[in-house]
Image (cartoon, rainbow over all chains, first blue to last red; front, top):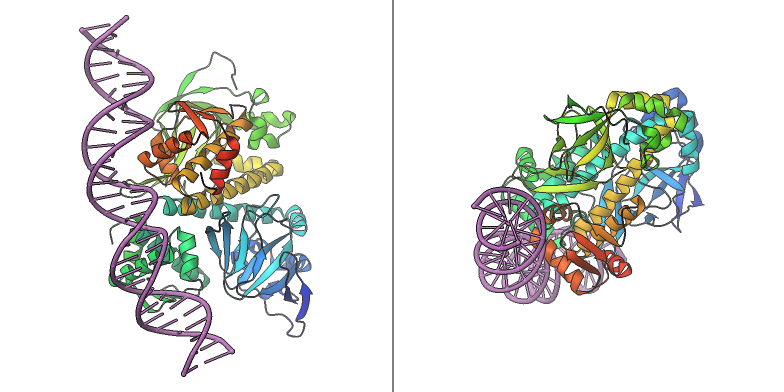
Length: 253
Length: 253
DNA sequence: CGAATAGTTGACATCTTTCAATACGTGTGG
DNA sequence: CCACACGTATTGAAAGATGTCAACTATTCG
């Protein structure tokens, strides 16, 4: 991650219309490498990755790329959170996922990006030209194998989300959301019992197919049932993870 | 497909508890090969596939495999339709997709099947032992490449379905469903303007996150708006495909 | 300190679900 | 060949849950 401290040079970034800091990359010390597509490499092979990757920061609220544009790049999220979403003509938004550190952004892509991506918080990413990626795949087949594995995971998660969107009640949706997020953060070592939500209620609503108000009411219900505690709106303490899981699975609150 | 007419021998099939007819396979004449994972092979290479594949029929309503069980097999659907679904403890069902001829069933699978599969109509499938598939992948890397490509397509479709489930109105959902199905069938050469639905309203409801009644009412609305005609409940004639597409995208009916 | 943003809560409206009745279509048996 | 029964679809009326609108609170940032 944190490479030579000097070289924060501002460079123009495609698909962004903005600028970002660029740093030399040091994959050897990357603490999330094992979670990502880069986990497919032996330490000795990492220079092949470093040669094609660029590191970059992106400000909270800034767009990384937009649905429908040419997918020249794929990204590895190192730090922060990014929302992936689709829009309907009249502005209705569906968030299809939140990327967290270690997540690879740019799957499900053929001709065009099938969704837009925006930074929820300040974020730090590794950028791969798709052309370079294709070459890495050729040289290191185990990398493509790993991408397939990650895509499979994402597909399974998408199916789980369909179950949630189509058939779960608002409280069940929020319980599922918190439970899943907790597990993901736990795996990242970023807290499991006590989590701080990077996203707003509006984001959560658009992820769960609800309105802000219904999300808020569902939080309150979970709080009143002593499944969670809310010291502040974005600090969630999971008081009864088993309770939360049961509700997420469809049991009565 | 239709191979030597003689050998309909009944063999026990795993994950099914039932029996099915087995036939020798003739991939060379398979008319949907170009659509499937087998499209990755040159005709000369097909014997490698034929050696590991078994052909099989499955009756309407019969289960092919169940969520949570060991995924020993993957399947290529040749004829018919299969519903892929997940269940909640209390019986709520979410259909995550309908497989049609040419579709590969068994993506998104790691340790266990992440969903159940049932025949909607009588169906005809090619069965691959996953172990054999892995070996084919090793021998023919372009096959794994193709699977990755198909998985990407499926992931993009899943994201589109999330948009539908989370943010579209009932009429928009039904319009999207009919539009997408029409396009898929068109590609298969099985009618685009006039389509016959293999699935019931209950299936459609569980696919779109609605009730049977709401699905029915939405059909009626589309009919009254002259976007479709319904000679019988399962014969849909698309009267105005552009209208249907517009509604699917979120325009007012 | 005041404005702005985000979240919560209440009251009400609306839309989908639920419950119930009716119609339709197919297949079976008289 | 017709009658009946069963499964499926449609339609209507009522109930209920989520969405909408609005007020209020809390927190953050000039």
